[in-house]
Amino acid sequence: MIRWGVLTVAICGQTAAAEVLLTPDEIDQTLSFGPWPPITQNDPSNRVSGNAAAIALGATLFHDTALSVDHRFACSSCHDPTYSFAAPVRRAMGREKLARNSPSLMNLAGLRWYGWGGKSDNLWAASLHPIIHPVEMAQTADSWRERLANSANAAPYEALFGPLESQTPQMVLVNTAKTLAAYQETLVTPKTAFDIFRDALERGDLKTAGTYPHSAQRGLQLFLTRGNCSFCHSGPRFSNNEFHDAGVAYFIDETTVDGGRYEGLRFLFSSPYTLAGDWSDDDAKSGAWAVRNVRQTHADFGAFRTPSLRGAAHTAPYMHDGSLPDFDAVVRHYNEINMERMHTDGEAVLAPLDLTEAEVSDLTGFLETLSLRE
Image (tube, rainbow, N blue to C red; front, top):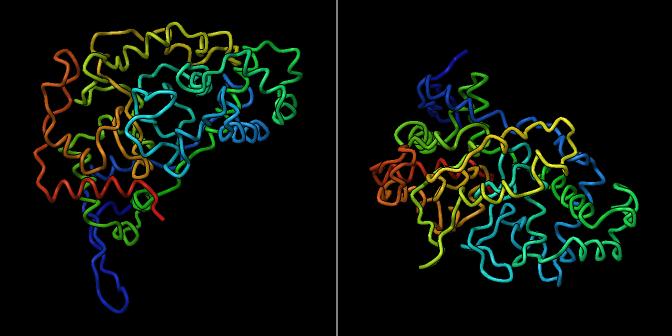
């Protein structure tokens, strides 16, 4: 199979070069970012995962302010489909300003950890917590069961799970979260210009691969080599879904610290809604090994989950606190990273990149190609 080179093609009567700039090793690395979309399995911990009726009910509830105790919010208030199910504000606004930026809900199926701090090891738990959080939707299990029983959603709920009157409020809450998770599992970003390039390389189609802009190819080379971006942003999702100190300040204000992964693990260890718990529908408890074996360390302070770069052009601002307004700011953050903000006992994977202005432009241009623009 042809792996790289230059192909001369005729375009509108003129001769142009369709060129692949990547080396064979860089092409091999590029192939690891696909194919897209990945094949995912239904979640064994959620018995309605992949169920069409559950997906439909979850979609309805996701956009319904009835899920909030006073009808002030829907899930879509902070996870707006217009912005790839994120929000164009620095920090999410509930009943008060929250500590973190709203993460995108795209491409969540099959992950091991959820949330900036990884306080959930499954998607239905991640969907449940905002419903009962006092500064978000502020429901209780009792108030939500009563609200649901007196709504038009009672009938589709009972068609899935049986009579409401025979279920405890806690069971109704968990089942509701599982329909929300079933819906969110369907949210997948489409193929992009990068995927067309990557797939063309895989089949040895230089003509198609060569139409990928040279600036984006140069940006990809930086992403793979000097930038070392692929250390954290790896695989088809462009994320290893693990936790890293990216040199971003983790003070919420002058007196309050965001505990990041450390706080996420503290919450996880006390949660009844894990893959190891009784609310999982998976008798084998597959996946429970993660929560049973993970340990807190001091380095978890200031560490946050690596977000996917797919569709990220629609989800600004960036980082866990929304402190970086655009891709240019993100690249410049790593280009001039303040090593004083890094944990002394954390992972030493970052250093200032010292990119030129042209290289900053190339890298941001590559990042743009990971999102489909109209």
